[in-house]
Amino acid sequence: MMYHHIGRKVRGLAMAICVIGVIGSIGAGVALYLLKILDLIPCIAIGVGGAIVSWLCSWVLYCIGDTQVRVERLEDKLIPKPNYAEYLNSNVALRGKCEICGKTTDLVNAKIEDAFGIRYRKVCRECFALNNAKQTD
Ligand SMILES: [Zn+2]
Image (cartoon, rainbow, N blue to C red):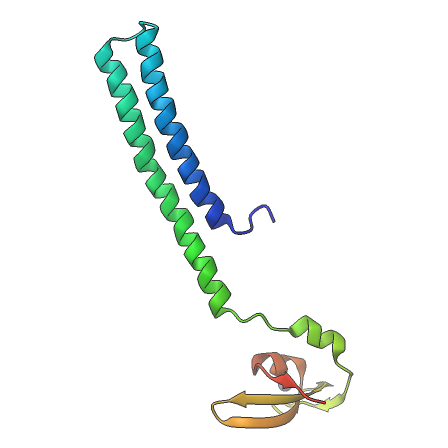
């Protein structure tokens, strides 16, 4: 689960890098001046310049993370989570020809509801899943 919901982590990382970069740049500028390593102007340039560069770079990283967060949200909405494993466990085997694809295998009594209305069919597991069917007794 280390990479689960990675978008939120990347967004957090972007903000952390921004804060560390701004504080680090200003701190470095102040330290270089106080230790008399550089003159005032180069120290201000390092502090201000570093802070601005950190801030701008964090935009890019934040954008990547934010896009990922939105993609994850869309996936949750668009990709149905089939109760497929649950159905495989509870299903009592019933052999025969699938009434949709004709394959001889274990069948399920399925209720299929779509644009054409409601129908009841004995179908294979693949057709059951493909047609988003409900199991009946
Ligand atoms: Zn089938």
